[in-house]
Length: 182
Ligand SMILES: [Zn+2]
Image 1 (cartoon, rainbow, N blue to C red):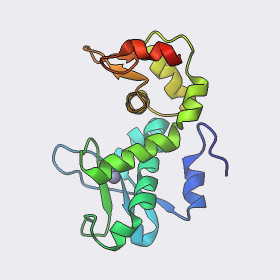
Image 2 (tube, rainbow, N blue to C red; image 1 turned 90 degrees about the horizontal axis):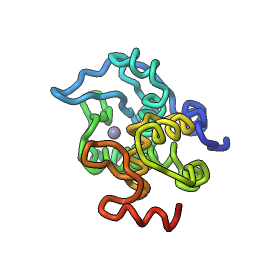
Image 3 (cartoon, rainbow, N blue to C red; image 1 turned 180 degrees about the vertical axis):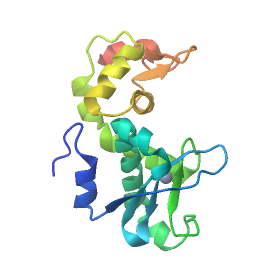
């Protein structure tokens, strides 16, 4: 399959011979678990407790699936070797906002998968002013959440969060740099 912008992530699961299932997963205190990977069963799990949110927000759902595909591709060997922590039923479970390296790696994988840098440059406006409306517009084109888009734009040094948290064009501390490439 061709991974065109806004491609069907569930089709990619099929291509990878991963099955998708809804199952309730208990959150750890103060953390949200949207998805999990049961690598030994080739199974990606979406947390049934968040069915309304995940069904109502395709961008969040796509990113969650992209994150689990990231674990599958990046961490399958670690999971088999049991060097990556699994829960009692053999699941790698994913907590929102976790700073642990495997979680960060899966987040970055999902960002690169859903928002390829070359495609981003094709679609970014030449004249950028900053602000949420631009980020919403480009997030919409890639079928991701505005938050996921802003994280990706920050990773690539294209935008950063200003003092009030709103998107500002350019890298933090060096906003003028952007005009060189804009
Ligand atoms: Zn994870």
